[in-house]
Length: 183
Image 1 (cartoon, rainbow, N blue to C red):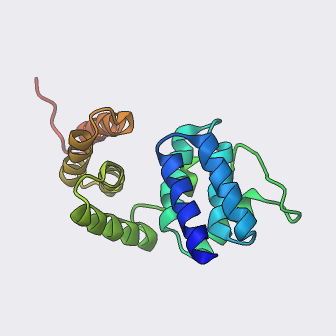
Image 2 (image 1 turned 180 degrees about the vertical axis):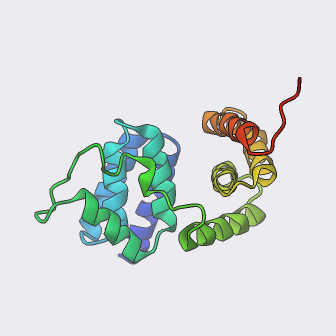
């Protein structure tokens, strides 16, 4: 049953990342039928369920969930379900980007290292390049962030999130203390 579960979970995540949320939800539900107590499948299903309300936050949270440790997944689930396992939907829940790891945290460091390894293994992994760009932008390493965002766009020119990140990068860089504006 483990192999079937892993295959279903991989396909569900793939569907989600391709934007086929309804298919992803069905596959995550199938995962939960096989392993009802699997916390990652539970969290992924919840993210997919909330995705139509805030797709960008859902995508970011899904990326985070895929690299999170069991204890981190439990913490997120604790904040989105009450004691009776009913979904809590408030403005302060999973739909916000506050669940993403702080760029200077050990979690972000581990995620960054894993993503660096992933792009070495698969140079066409545009989402990994995008997320690396975000992490480096938050760390204030604008040159490295720009390189990763540029690679993401070279791989997938229609990655609107990368374009948005580049705009944020430019804005932050121009506001950087000690930066002189050209006349």
